[in-house]
Length: 533
Ligand code: N01
Image 1 (cartoon, rainbow, N blue to C red):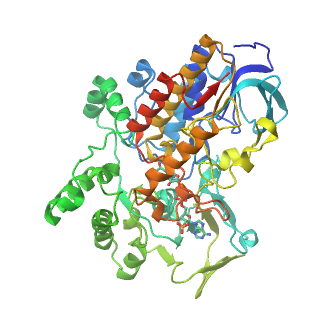
Image 2 (cartoon, rainbow, N blue to C red):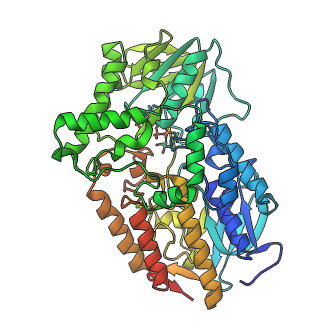
């Protein structure tokens, strides 16, 4: 590696979430001169910004955590089966302190642009007044880090306070005795709604699309379970890496349609009773055909009917028109039960479309709804949003944003042709959001660190995918998606939630284990598909 001046680095990392923190530790351990820029006031990434009441990970805490340090995983004690946002943030702050990462992090510093210089083979990085150069520019900017505020008529005219779940005030929001409205019933809305209903005078939920959700069955972490996990952690982590979802769900190899209805229901019941994502692993074809998917979708629809007392409300809450899981499935605590409360009203925007926000509330097709506070749980400009907002210029002055105008193109979700030494962590075209993010991140960070070590020991300065390798990978990602029911929903996986965004299925559906095999094969063949100079 070539540099050691204060404004010149071997690697600049953007983002101090799970990816950026681990990468910083890993690269520093290899003797590289690394700096990390983070826009937030503290480390934490998505867990710094998403502080809304009820915010919680829906992967279990013992799995949604780093495996790279044995002492860390033995010492840290998770409080609950599913970790709440404050606990995850505390964990990431602890990681930053424990591994002395903060000395190489500039907080509150947003990267605005970066240009590749073909003569010096370095990237110039401009970040809120800081100007540095770096050999490698590594984007650990997150898949769900840019909140999306919809363009609803009259939104600015609302006289009360408006909050977005993805950019929640640090000091919190007191809903006591307030009339509150929530727009959005994806994972964030489904977590927020039961919490707001507990304290608000009245809650109005403005729902456009009903979601499939399974109960989390959260609770304090059972000490016996914790002991068992910690005694077998390396094996548990190995199995997570060797799984499709980056976490063991007890996936069943059978096809749903090869099984009698009663047996299927028994299998679904068993998994429903365990809570969380286990339901998705009930049969291997649930995401492959409409017919198989219908079996589990109908099962969840029946659960909703059985939970929600008012039949009209239940009917509106029943998801229709897209396969279960094709919009990311939600995991909840008392979500459907919340609609049995006297202080909660569901407005079905499919029956009564949202015309405008008014100074005192919302006007839908047939009524005015008054409220004091509006919460937008309207999601993110996913996968590409953070990168789009940084002006990244590669070889020949080509802008990444322009290159990706018809959809993101990458090789393995790790590199982009025409952008040497720009590396992505959990980029489009990798399993990322379809997996336990921490498993996916660890695999990417370790692959990237090994690559940089290889380049250093073999005397290479730059790496970039060939256009052919990139084209081939994009075609493979699309082909794999086409064998599934995923593309059948207007989801954020497809970019469908952002007006004008090209609609292409962005994550890799092939599963973590197969994906990691491919990445390792590429490395073993001297980084085939990449050009090293
Ligand atoms: O966002 P979403 P999210 N008028 O895009 C609605 C992760 N996550 O923040 O579907 C009315 O899923 C929109 O309706 P529709 C997880 O990966 C994880 O909830 O477009 N409604 C939808 O209901 C998740 O999938 C965790 O018709 C409008 C909602 O807003 C991802 O983040 C927790 C509208 C957006 O849902 C994103 O989840 C939270 C409009 N104009 C998030 N515009 C856990 O780990 C949008 N909507 C548990």
